[in-house]
View (cartoon, helix red, strand yellow):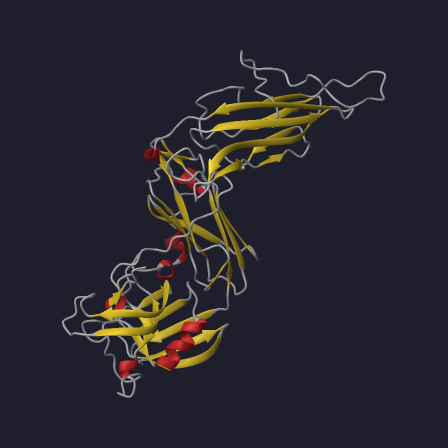
Length: 421
């Protein structure tokens, strides 16, 4: 786009964003880390695209040249960004359309941004698959053929209306393209400018998966919408997500600034069940118990939360201090194999300072995290992917919605109530 942001247009794929983490776990200290002639509509600016046909005919009565008509007039200015360009053919068919503009990529390099489109079944029309970028000059190239296979070619251009940054909302999507995730992994779509017309936006969101597993979008607020399947993803599922939002009305004079997409694969089903009373974590891989791990979780006053959590971050090594969570007891640890499950600071991690002290499987002595031996934590770290469920029971302290990836801590019906459709 002709803004300070990079023009990504319809061909843009998503930038991925992880949810922001707030208080660090157990005192975790975050790392300093896209064709023809102008419109043949009855307007003064139109011109004919049925001139200078090429080709030959074997008939004594030559076929009438094909006439191509675009939905946007030649030389039009201030075209709305939510316009869907189309081309129609009379006395023939559309053989080729190219609609494009010049933009810049994320590095600021100039690039051609093409608007994709589809031909009708009978070949008499072409319709763009996406809307337009603001403040951009578009070129439209069309070709059509008549019954004698004579070709007509034409070109035109038009410019779209300019929009300020405040009237554009930029989308980001997660998980990363090409990533391998856990069976509970949601899809996260976030916007930098609020979306009022959630229904219109949601109409342009699509999720496809092998096996056509059902699921739903759910709006958290005007800047965030999540997607989850009805039940956990099946192991091996391939998922593709498309948010075709460029030029889509967001309400209040706001329009989508880009379209984003991602695709990912679901790994093995690895579900960890943490029982705070028995002080054991049982890890099930593809439905079978793979390991039982003695643990030490949150002590009185610092109880670990019960609920269905998801692994939202993995850190091979991280620093945890009492100051980060406001605990009076002083500690400052370099913690290996840390796996975050809440924004407020709960992790599964190795607790080497507790080894040999008879705490694992016996006493809960942490400030909310689930600690275990280094060997068990290393093994678990290698099995759990982002989006892997950690189901915790045994505490009266319940997981708050929004404290980490909590989409599975409510029923599907309740989650579905957040859909705008």
